[in-house]
Image (tube, rainbow, N blue to C red):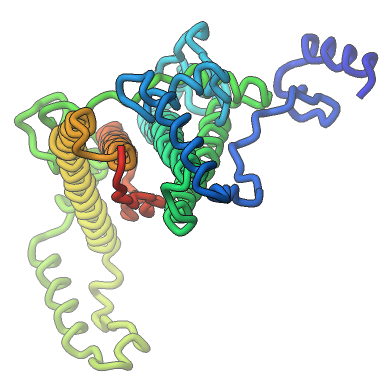
Amino acid sequence: MTFLSTTVSAVLAQSVPDALAAADPAMTGARSDTPWVILSTAPDLPQPPDDLEQARAIWREANQRVAEFPRGHIDLLRWESRRAGAEKTTPDSADASNMPVMDWSTALRQSLRQRPDLFVHAGMNESERNAVQREYAEHVRSLRRAWYEAVGANQSLRLREAAWQASATGLELGQRMVRAGNWSLARLLDEQLIENRHRQVLAQSALTRQSSLERLARWMGIWKSEAVADLGRRLPHELPAPPEQLTTGNDGNEGPESAALRSLPALNLQRLRTERLLATVRADRMAAWERAVDVALQDQATGPTAIAAAPQISDRSLLNDESLEAAVEAQAGLLRAASERRSQAREAWAQLQARHAAARHQQDVVAHLQTVRQQETVLRYNGMLQSSWELLAAARERLNALDEAVQARRDHWLAQADWDALLAGAGYDSVANNPAPEMRSDNNMKAGGH
């Protein structure tokens, strides 16, 4: 693109409505960040020294350098990394502390600018307002889910990057051991496989992060690529911790089914209408209808061919009774709606309870145990009782546990978004949000030496 066309595009972007600019193919944004990808390179397989004197010289030099640092190999590699400068490995890994953090309410307000159909206005009747409320609740739920997934993916990517860096440190140490003649190539290949598995996991995490950001951007109406990149930098640093206790709604003593029924005004209107229609039908006429239904069901064929013919009612006096027909239809419709609502409430509440318990357990028990385990490994490492590779393996295990805690926390907030939407009048998707297990790379290689 020439300088003139770029200038024209910039001027047009300021003078035309945002929607027209977004739909104009001539409007090109800045180049967006590319997810971290795996580059195909030949593995670095250093050769051991050719003779004994060369091996001794390399060994003495390595020992002299390691002796300058309190914790040996680990501190040496950290010092070299600082001297070389930290390499940017993933999108937005640079410091973004200068950018203001976007809160959830800001994201919601921006998304509602793209949805004028979600505003109620004067002149709407109660049914129309209830319909808008349901659509609004579903919109908020979808936006909240996209928000939590994006924040969680950001947090998970940082942990995956740290785990990969730990595996890369182990690989670098292994390469130095081979050059000094202390390791075989077979031993080094184990470290290379560990590093490559973590590299693959990191690449997948970067792609997951990019996809989650794009989903959130779509819900917020963000169309500029540079704005999407800024969105990733402005998200909160981590997901909030789950609460200690769950409540069903405003009244903590109300059961989930009652809360869900009370939150659906349309169901209450349907109930009042059904009561009025049932009041117009005599009890003996309703009893006659029930008997006719029982006879029709008893006469219906059973077995594999039962689906071929619907049950039949032959009493025309019942079929010609319009009041009876309206009452029966209203009663059946109300029962279906109430049963579905109660079932949705039970399922959504069970999901929320399970996700909350899992998040608390992962945070308070598993992640804590992994942290204590790593601290114990550090003490044993400092006492020359465990190797550098065991220390790095413990660090990777702790990072994996923290990442699992992030996933569990994300799943809790997704379930919370579903439950809150149900209480606001939305429905509930019976397909539970069960993400597939992510790639893991916990191969703890035990190695001797410090």
